[in-house]
Length: 404
Image (cartoon, rainbow, N blue to C red; front, side, top):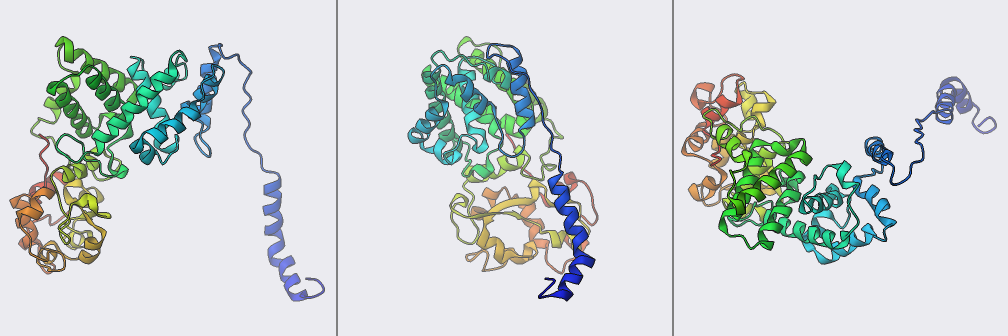
C-alpha cells in the first residue's frame, strides 16, 4: 500500500489502524473461563456432583446431556448406548423420523431413558438416570424404545383414539411422551381393557389444558405413572390430577384465551383438536394435516388495530387463531373477516358449517365475522372498541373452545 496506493495507506493509518489493532489485541488477549474439577472415582458420590456441573455448564455449544454422560458410565459394563440408539432408529420408524436419527434431537435419547426409568419404577430425574443399573439394561432399553414408538403412534393418530399431533411442531410438550410410553406399555403388557385406555387419553388432555408439564417434569412423571398404575388393577382412588381438572377446568371462570403463543401447551393442543375434528382448509377443502400450514388470525391484526385493539395477548390469543394452508393464508392477506368469508378465492363454493364448525366457529363467532367488514365502525362490528381483556374478546367474538 505504501508503494502502490499511498493515499489508501494514509487513510488506513489515520482512520482504520487503531480499530484494527484493538480488534487483534482483544482477540489475542481474550480470557476465557476455566473450571477445574477434581478427579473422582466412578463409585464416588462426588461423581453425581460432577455430572450436575457438566449439565449446567454445557448449556451452549455442544451440550452434554444425561444421555452422553450415561453413555460413558455404561461403557465400562460393555454397554454401547450409541449402538443401541442406532439399532433403535433402524427398528422404529416413527422414533427415527421424529428424532431425525439423532439422540440429541429434542433429547429423544434422554426421553427414552426416562421411559426406561419409569418402567423400572424409578424416578426419571437426571440424578437417578445417571445411576441406572447396567444389569439387564439392553433388554430394558429395547422395551423402552418399543414403548416410545407405540407412544408416537398414539400421539400422531388422527382418529378419535389418538392425539392428532400431525407434526412435531404441534406436540404440547415432549415431557409427556415418556409417561404415555410407559403407561401404554403397561396397558398392553397387562392386556388391560377400555377403562385404562380411556384414562390415558383423559390424563393427556387434562395435562395439556392445565399445562402441568411445563415444569418439574421428573417428579410429576413418577407421581402420575404410579397413581394410574395403582388405580387400574387395585381400584384405588383416582389420580389427583383428575380431581384437580374437575375443579379447575370445570370451573365457570376457566378460560384458555390467555394462551397466545406456541410456548403454551394449550395453544398447540387446540390445533391438534382441529385435526381431531376433521378441520379442512377453506380453499382446498382438504384435511389440514395434508397442508403446509399457517397459524392464521381470524380477526387480522390490521383490522383489530383499526378498531383500537392492539394488545398482543388479545390479538394473538388462541381464540383468535386457526390453521389453514399457507396458500389460503396468502390470499386472505389483510382482508377483514366479512370480506374473506365472501371471497370466492378463499371459499370457492361458499362457507357453511361443514367448513367452519370443525374450526370451532360457533354461530355467534360467524355472526361477528359477517359484520366485520373493512369499512365498518366499532358500533357496527360489536367487537372491542378499545383494548380490553382476552375474556371480553372471547365474549364479543363468540370464539371460545369447550374442553369437555
